[in-house]
Length: 431
Image (cartoon, rainbow, N blue to C red):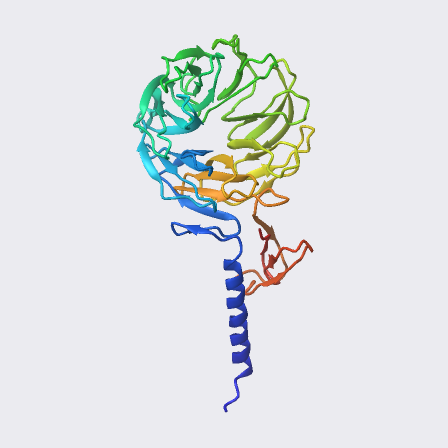
């Protein structure tokens, strides 16, 4: 028998080890449907072109969370029905108006089935006139209960409706729509009729039209002064508070003297029973602690971008996610340093839900540049499976890491990855 060359034998052994590791990895956090797989807690699912926003809810009554994605480039919405393992069926697209920008879910006709509303900014870009927005619309899609929807019904709004929220603002038991119109700096109120239709808009002018500064806008409904009536916080470059009278009308808008504001979220971040705000722009974001009377105190600056509030790590304190950064709350209105997670290119909006039924909150992120929705699964001790980069010494790539080892580095009975010696390394925490 001809003896094997020692270097050849080492190469074969290294290859066998690599194949064993590869098979192990395929068993970690992997589930598949429609050729999509979770790799280290993330999977990307195809939707239409240019998704800007996503909403989560049970659209077909099977107890599993589904998704609605707003596709700004091809003027559609994509409905993705969820599976129990956190994967989604192929999207079913429905036409919207021109340049859809946001979506909100609600039972508009009180039949126990979720419906949804989409704002259409109706904006165009030309070399001569630049960016302009005409009077927009909100498209209402009434659900059939099986995950399909009736053709849209359009209602007029102001110019450039960038965001929509759902609430019963006149206390009649019917859900209403409130819309932030960025182009003419107004709020459109559409009162619901309980049969899935809405009354003509009532426009509230915030300020004189000062020109179109941004396409992004935000609107949230909460009780900011503790009187039991729904109030409105709206960001249309400048941020405003509108205190509700409980009958669908509002007091004179009050400016928060905060610009630019494109994204808003509300929650009680310091456990004082008063609603607080996060007001984010394109450059930075601000935490506003509520005084309980509709006024606020600025209490910290964090990263900018679209924002969602939830208790991501289950410690009883509200956290928030701004773009791809998650800030865990301390319970006193302050937040820990950002934890950053990867998505597809061009993240533009997000929704929160338990997509795989494990009792932990997950994130759905609309990736506008890749035409996908990224799902980030939550884990015990959370908030999400992700990656942490570490620099090592030695020669940079391509003479850098060329193999990996597995070990329980933090003695928590979970395997972690270690990229070997030299050049940047990445440690991945398993599910």
